[in-house]
Image (cartoon, rainbow, N blue to C red):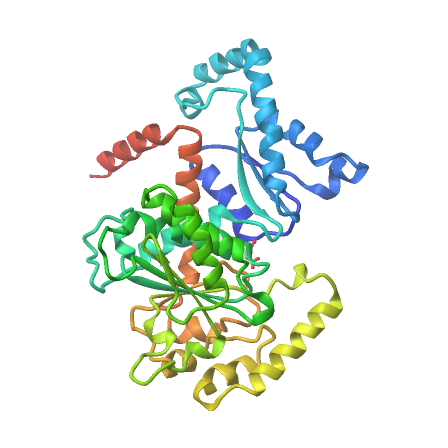
Length: 412
Ligand code: ASP
């Protein structure tokens, strides 16, 4: 596996590397500063080079759409490789068989072929993080009406849940991928004639950093595809999702997925008498940091800072905990233990965060609420998820399951 990271990373790069090593593979850490990138080599040429020596190419890049460019380059190279290089690749295969390299001799992905994984492309997407996020939700569910007895991989475990996404949804690529992944989960869980949505997703962002309309539409389309909806639903989906973008208090439900937009103050203030506030309704609170590095200029960032401090200072008294916490944070929102208390958060609430954090989830949260602070465990779930993903991509799942069964047998 080659890690082609052209933007900083701690968790994604380390977990991909650890996952590959645990599966018995090797990892090449590409270092841009000492590579031909500094001589002006194009991304495409760098990729043609690295794919020649890799089965998996994990790419992170500052531009949205870069991962698709890498995939297109690798697709071409794979085709060429299968037409021209097969005899030599076969020799390599015989060689590795002799050395007992079972992981490479039994896998389904032919030698000389490479798969690409998007580890974050600018403000675009971060799909493997979304898989980690959904997997974390599945792993973290303890009680509630869905029994523990349901197998881990069953999306029904999330049926009827409210997932609140909080933070920078304009630039936050993890929220873009997660919204669509949750659409798929909702679609898979939706049943004809259901009165309640299979999943409610609430987008809570500072007004400057709202969820883009095309992501809201894409999430609804994912739900519709998942629910295998009837013809012509797509047009309706788009129209309805534009309405969500214009903000609708009860949200709009398409194929089991209810999407809502709410203000930060709604976290702790009840919209109507007798209706619990958003925090009290939430099962999973997914917090993200403001992506300072994606603001077009330092001035734009300063303006944002100014506007959040003014908004926090003028918030209504009913949202006092939210505004107090926000006033002391640079993001404009902060999930403190006091805020969870004031918002009457469910004991089963899980707070997730793709990390890194700035000050939107303070260390005091995991210190006083270790169970709710699932973001600390989310990193480990990410290791297992990425192991599964690599094994699946290389077609090595059966072999790994057999090895696991053997190891379990020996352990008994
Ligand atoms: N680590 C995540 C990403 O690369 C989240 C973040 O940076 O805020 O997108």
